[in-house]
Image 1 (cartoon, rainbow, N blue to C red):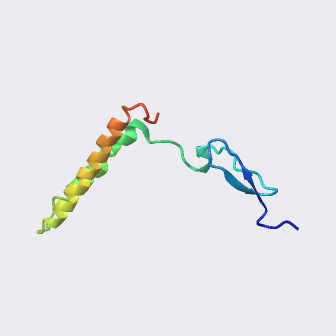
Image 2: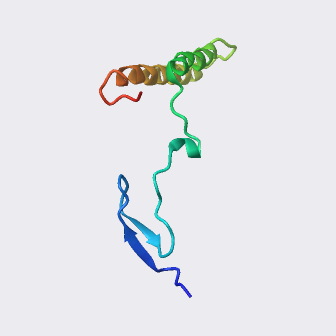
Image 3: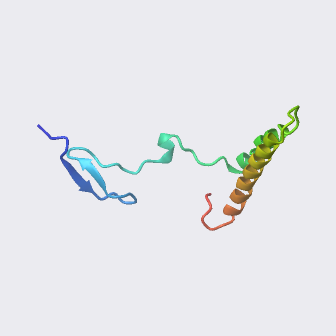
Length: 98
């Protein structure tokens, strides 16, 4: 009978050293598509990201009297715009995704 704690060290290229139970196979390279990742949305996804910004900014028009909501909305919109600008400049660098 095999003990559960029997393990062996395995060198996996491109991964950290792993522990594998005796009789089991080490993790092989898995294509991202196999577990649901299919890449980025591309150019149109970045263009369509403006729509949530516009909808969030539209909340500034309303019947609320306090300005605390406006501050949070403006901050959220500014953060979303900052992320889009950062992503645009990030893509111009050598380490950008394709």
